Image: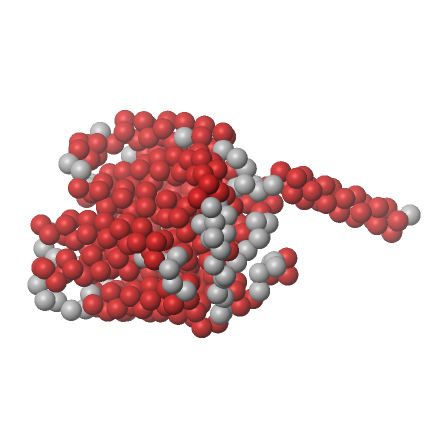
Amino acid sequence: MKANLKISSRTFSAVVFLTGGSIAWFFLIWNYLDRILILSPDWLNVGTLFFYCFAVLSAIIGIILVKRVQLRKFLWLWVILGLISTAVLTISWGTTFSLFSAAFLGFSLGLGLPSSMAFLADSTTVVERGKVAGTTILGTFVLAFAGIGIVSVFGSTAFAMILVCFAIRSISILALVVDKYQPEKEKIAVQLLKPAYKEFIFYIVPWFIFNIAADLALNMIQSNALYQSAASTGNLLRFPLIAVFGFGQGIIADRFGRKQGVIIGLVMLGIGFFILGFFLQSFSVIVYYAISGVAWGSLFAIYLVVPGDLAPFGTRATVYALSIVAPLIIMGVFPLIPVLDVLAQNASRFSQALSVLLFLSIVPVLLAKETLSESYISERKMRGYLEKVGKLVKEYKRTN
């Protein structure tokens, strides 16, 4: 695949190590947060809220700060903060310190995440961005799945979880070692961002609805003790499927456009909710997790691409921040909403309603601008037809 890319091997590796390693670290932290925060059940929700709130706050601070310092220095600071905040989790000095650790962990997540995603976009052309994003998603969830596997094999203690998270976070250092990329700062007029924001609304609305639906489903399943074992099995399927379909969707996005990836993700999750609505049992929970893996893979790849397609160089971190902040707010707030218990008791009807909502959220995608040039898509199709004709001519000459 690399032969078809203009991005250098060093920068390609740096993108995967930086963004992939960081997101993999986040998913491991997310998976183990209730076990690595040394908090009583009464304080755990507070610690979780601190984690997500400070992640959102630091993402906003990060897009302001990165404009005032060199990108490489900023990214070094971000990675080192991530390592320190992970290591601090091994210390147990009471509830107050654990709450500080949760806030520090969240701060170290959000600070540089939009800039690392912008680095992916800044390093690629529009016609190769999907492939690089897809490879990043593949690397992300291979790392996350490997991390979970290592913890399962060598002991599911809090210390083992923290150690694996620390090792995964360290991978991002490789990005800053192998590549010396330092873009020149450009002054971009604010007016140039307005069309990007306008178009991105059509993409951010379905992304927002998708995250709401997925998080509600997660809380609904986890709140029922009958489905805990099925959820654990489903998770083992979901991460590999996100990796595979994220990679595949990245390749498809560079051939046929970005919009269909969003539509596929929304439809797949809608089908998953439809199944839960009519057949809520352990097997259907496992099937839902598998289907949601396909959906998440499709959308992760696309939402690593679209903000970079829409926003001009030098402003992309701001647009990426919008796509990050929405899910972080949802993940932090939803577990604290008491009405979710009522929804869990009426899971079948609730799932059917979410399925309809997801299918309706396709409408904004249809109204959105296709960010891969239509002329490029047509040109690729024409080249494909010509290649097929050429092969037929060669076959005809060979046999006659």
